[in-house]
Length: 149
Image (cartoon, rainbow, N blue to C red; front, side):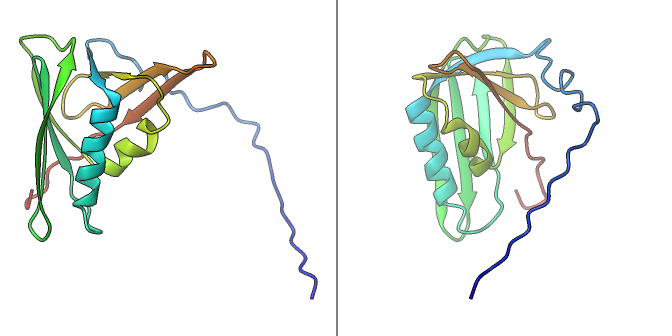
């Protein structure tokens, strides 16, 4: 039996939303992390979710980032990764949902991932230049703490 499918598309004639303010890195702190190790840590964190929305804690400080997550039903994660370029006098604690980070970072092909952060209410902004000279930017908003976390 034949199947008829009608696909309808419409184009809006409105301006693209202003995004430059969101991507403004003024007063943000630059840092770099080794991509493979960071993605493996994020995958381990995501594997502990067991279908739950549990944020992973990231403690950025001079020379390292501490990554931790606890799921009472499955287990805990507590790892440390080396950071390059994070200023000595800064310490920032942020929380992210690991799958949100993984979704964008898996397309980055560089050995090092560069990012910018400011505080736990501002996004983390990842940047890279792809092999075909395309600028890539990936922005992830932090997750605020809940009573149980």
